[in-house]
Length: 209
Image 1 (cartoon, rainbow, N blue to C red):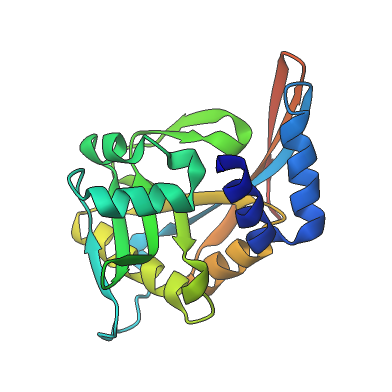
Image 2: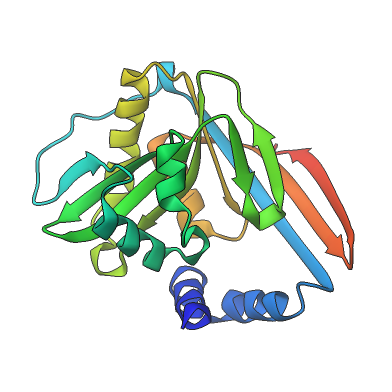
């Protein structure tokens, strides 16, 4: 069931060609893997946050005790399964958009040491910096500007808490995600080129021109 959810999510996000390539990569990942991971960032002090309007959805930060929301989020993103409550307890922020009792979308943000699972790497961020671990919109709510709304509201929350820099990353072929990052004001900074062959791993950082 978990693998089926992953396949359908990839099909939804990337299309059939990339999904098949990712599925083959998953099957043979213990032998070989190659990923280009694009890093983007912004100066929150210089960011422009449009005036927000109340709508049908309710936006709020969740806590480790919000079990139902956590289960819905972990069902949407299988890599978070069993770990979200712990992340929240350690200080991560998760902003959700709620349609009644349904999670329409969320943005999970971490601080300090963060894990980049797509390139099997970790990075320590300075005080005052935040990392967008995941932003996801439920398929039924796509095409309505919810991704942008989650971003802008998280910008406001981070600024309120005194954070100055906000970073994130995605596969370089995830054009939908990159389009959203550009729209809300992120600048593309660098690519992490990750390669794994058997037990040998290599990372190379290249600035985006």
